[in-house]
Image (cartoon, helix red, strand yellow):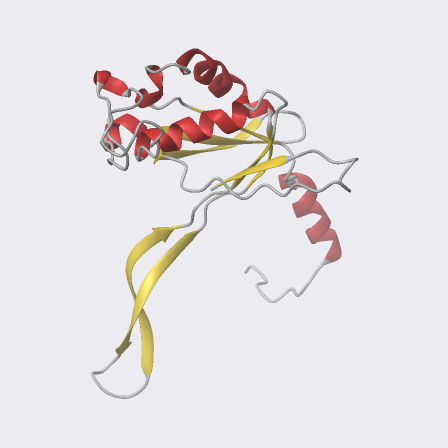
Amino acid sequence: MVDTHRGFNVSVFKAEINTKKLMKPNLFHVEFSIPPGLLNGKNFQDNIQTARTLEYWCEATSLPGLNFQTYPGQRFGYGSIEQRPTMPAYGEVGFDFFFDAESLNYDFFYDWMNIIINTDMRDGPNEQTGEIAGGRKPVPFELAYKADYEADTSVLLYDQEGKLVKKLVLRESFPKVIGDLRLAWGDNNSFLRLPIQ
């Protein structure tokens, strides 16, 4: 018979921790695929190089959560309410990048967002500007095809020996938000961060 009521045992606890080990939150890196829409246009060489080196500039990120959307229902058609799941909802992922002195990291995400919805109105509201995959030149505020702006993003976790433990791939991802950048004269000993959602 197995004793299922053995209570908390410090020796068993230590043995379990020593066997499975603990993950550290700083042993990770991220990999970005370049969306097809950035393979054309005037900045495509810079964007390709930036996509290759973004993993070295990512200071922090998070793993996406999983949440079930629910609705309230009565178990027997009457009485108390219980929550019933309807569909999964995956959380959004945030990335914090160091802002490089050449602004290439910022330009990469700005160009990426600009192929999703073209916000360039320098030549007027009806002028075709820029160029995305397939040689298409969108007018301002035109929404692109998903195939032009979606790309895979990977988050890789490592153990303390450098062995890959888990790889999560964010399929068909795209940037939703370039966060505000706080500038202050008093921040002499810190670096500018680029938050991306």
